[in-house]
Image (cartoon, rainbow, N blue to C red; front, side):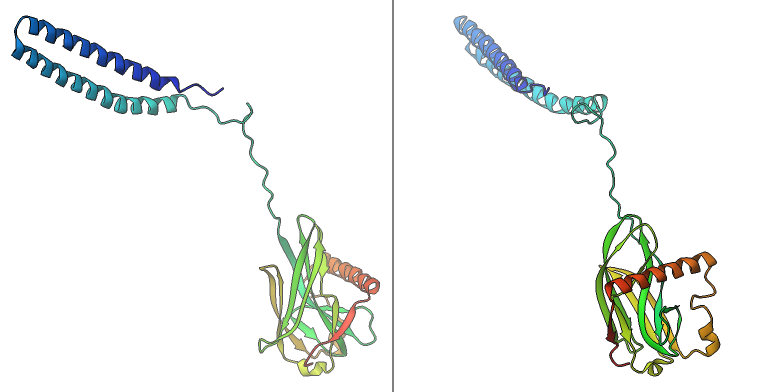
Length: 264
C-alpha cells in the first residue's frame, strides 16, 4: 500500500495560518490597548517589534525545516532500507543466455587423386602428385546446436582470392567436418608446386581460422604414408578418419558438384 503523503502540506499550511492569525490578533489587541491609553509611539514601536519578530520566527521555521528535514530524511533512508521486491518475492538472479561460441579443432585441405575414392587429408604441406581436385575443410563444434553461416576463402600468394564459398552448416556439441559443397578441379596441378596459399574461414564477423599451407610435389614414399599428420594423437587420427568417412557418405547422398579452380 502506498502511504498518503498529500496530507502533510495541509498541516503545514494550517500551522502557519494559525501562527499568523495569532500574532496578528495579539498585535491588534496591543495596538488598541496602547491607543486607548494614548501611547501612540509605544504602539508603533510594539507593532514594529512584533513585525520583525514574526519575520524572524518565519525565517527560522523555514530554514529549520529545510536543513533539519533534509538531515532527518537522510538518516531515515539508511534506517528504513528495505529489500527491493516485486509482488512480495525477493528478486532472483537472471539466467544468462551466453553464446557458447565455436570451437575449432582442425583445418586443412582434402586432396582427391585419380584412381582413389577416398580423399587424403593434408595440413601444412599439400601433396599434388596425381591430384585431381582439392577441397578446404575445418573440424569444429559448439556447445549448443545451432546453424552457422560460413565463408571459405582460398587466397594465393599474391593475395588474390581464387575461391570463395558461402554456405550454412549446423553444428552441435560434437566434432563435425565443415567444407564447401564443391570439389575444386585442377587442370594443371604442377603449376601450383611451391606456392604458398592461405585458407581463411569466417562465420559472420568472427574469423574462425587463417591457415597458410604450401603445395608440394610428393614422392611415392610420401604417398604411401597416412595423409593424417604423424604429430596427431591416435584418438585424433581416428576421429578425423571417421569424420572423413561420414563426409564421403554425405557427398554420395547430395551429389557434390565439381567446379574448375580458375587459373590452375
